[in-house]
Image (cartoon, rainbow, N blue to C red):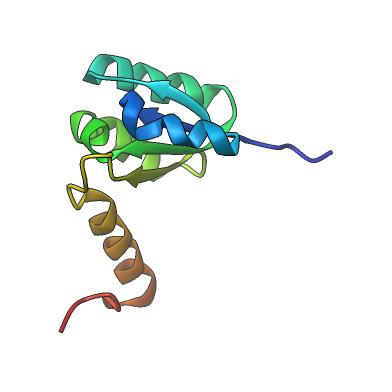
Length: 108
């Protein structure tokens, strides 16, 4: 039996509303308590991938760290509609460096 996981996006309404157009469930959060409880609830409800806007992720770093070592859900940080804080790209760079042994994306 194939088990399909759901996909969600968490952030402010203006940043995540477009995700609904491609079939991703969207959840608004504006403070750390709402964001933390949403991430924990979605993880328990078989969401395999959760996109979180960087400003919201910035409010809940301990929650993000807790799920980094878990297989599921995969948490991907995305810029908000106001731009990026650089957190998501820093995570990608760190993961690539860990996997490859050096940062292949570094600007020389």
